[in-house]
Image 1: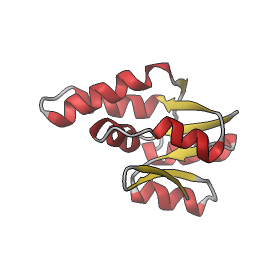
Image 2 (image 1 turned 135 degrees about the vertical axis):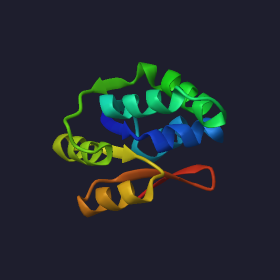
Image 3 (image 1 turned 180 degrees about the vertical axis):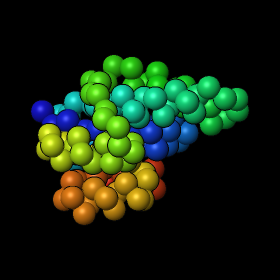
Image 4 (image 1 turned 90 degrees about the vertical axis):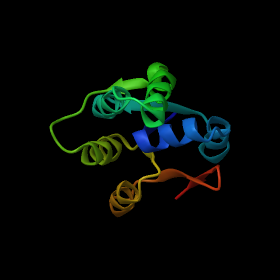
Amino acid sequence: MTEVIFDSSFLMAVVERPTTWQQDIVEKIGGFQPVLLDCVGAELRELSSGRGKRSRTARVALDMASDFNQLPCGDAEVDDEIVSAAAGGRRLIATTDRELSRSASAARIPVITLRKGRVALD
């Protein structure tokens, strides 16, 4: 089963604008195992500690990711950790962050993103 590493941007996007993202991913790649890196979880926890819509969105994203497989991070920047984990384990990355998408593409890692509310595979 293919593992997909989720970035905070993707998780928050599907919370803000609910979609059939899980079904869409299955249609694109087949069955998959969602993965959350510890550093992405920490990023979401930090965002959720404030007030307002963005904090609420981060809290819902954290709750949604509570059943995902957890993997540890090293000491690099979050995006670098995501690319490294994906390259090392032949995983896909789910993100809406353009810079992370570019880094993943440069490393020849497939990227799952959202276009017009639907999942796209780059």
